[in-house]
Image (tube, rainbow, N blue to C red; front, side, top):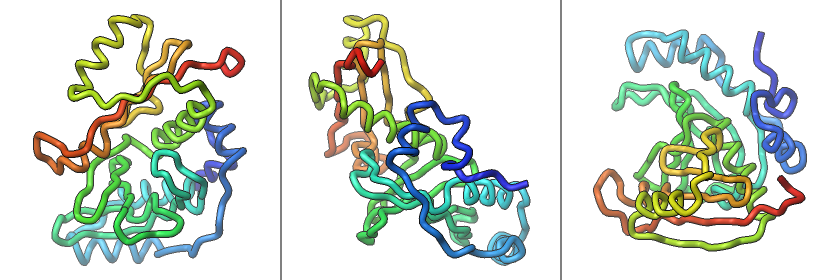
Length: 229
């Protein structure tokens, strides 16, 4: 039995993420895409074998997210979830291209999911892993929307984000990570009085595998309105 769409059956998303999707997301019809047999044939042609596990992951992701559209604060654009099945012969791997794309593409930004469900975003020839799953990405967007309703306390671009976070946690020892909304270079922390958002994705993407990055890591802190706790 195929999984229901995220707008129909959003569990295990948090109540905040479910409310965000209910209020701000919609579904747009999409073409059905390739059949299972076409996907198997593409794998056999490009890889020399067919992987039923990869195909099952693709179908589950497509059934759950395909056609979802909303304005993403993380991407700063209206986005469309349109996962397609692609096989990269040179890299010898399957990718679910166009999993997260700007609703009006600019030809420069990309968003795809790998069979391990990690979400990758890119700009031109650079790609970097952003979130462990599409649910993590949705949780981050929902939390960003919530945070922007709170009182902005500060926006910093520290030269060493790890040292900055260590000092911040020393001053506020009740800060705890919010793992469900965090990614590989994006992190959320809260102590019920403040929200702390560390976004190092652009820095990681700009570094392109090298040590130093021309883009800064941005640390934003909000004070939580008591009525929204």
